[in-house]
Image 1: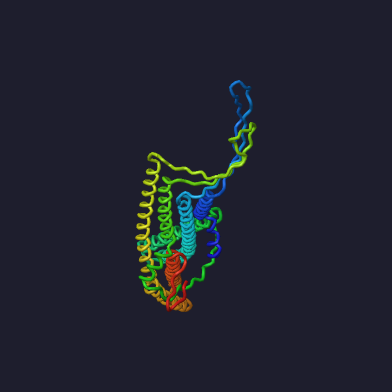
Image 2: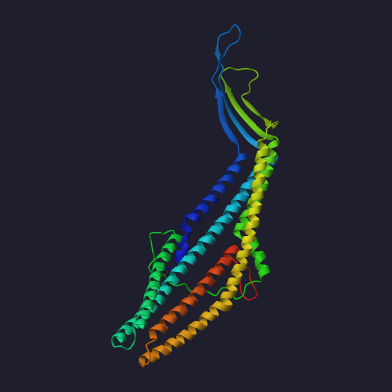
Length: 400
């Protein structure tokens, strides 16, 4: 399994599909608002009878075809449509945020599997070394070269190493299950993963002030909340217009079973409705929308504080990984490689038996470097996600 294939599978995750469905709901509601300006056509009628004094009963049936179209409602429909459009913008931004979250989740679970495999390899090597020392000590105990306490200490060290290897083996399984769940394939556990070829990212990041402005402007969650605040303001305007008249065009075609001089077969005109009294209904809806707007503003402020904290933490992590963790891991690998070569040479000369220990130390050094590499890749991906998918260009590197 490659990282690219895992990321592609994540698009079918239920959380992503929920965000996609909510976007479609918002689009449908916008279409519904837009349709309020369409013509409406209805057929109504009545079956009745009537008579005049001294006359017989006669049928007085009516059938009417009525077409109406709203012409002007003092901003009620326009503001409602604007609010629906802002909701679509908000849901589209949240879908982008869901995509970024799914990508980060799959990357983290993918790296967890790779690190679990490396940890198992290191622990397995250490277990084999510990067993070798214990087994050798048992032979030497039988010949009287070592005492019982030393044999027991080496056996305890072997059992500890064996326990760590068992825990590592368990993490291999649980990390694969977590990756399968992140990919929405819980029944399919991948046996082998292809380590990705990770880039170092941009050579230099913009300064913190530039990144702060860029991230605040491009962050999907903040963008969604800004759109929801704007939508709430538009809904408030639409609600206030509920107290104003509505003017409609009306076209009526009618048929009657009894003719009368006051009846028209076709009629065209303007109809209007002026609200005179609505009780507390409009005021209650306005109060509710005001509270919703205040909630959205508070959510925006809280999300902004959280975003700035996450941005600062991510930048600190990237700086530490690049300037401390990775250089230290590289030196550790260099030292362990040298020690491993020396151990191999001594093993071939039968001078020492520490080759296994050197190989275990080399595995641990590799694990340390890979951990730093994967943390850096996740931190850079998180930084791009915070900014909405890209970073501003710098003089030293193009935009990511």
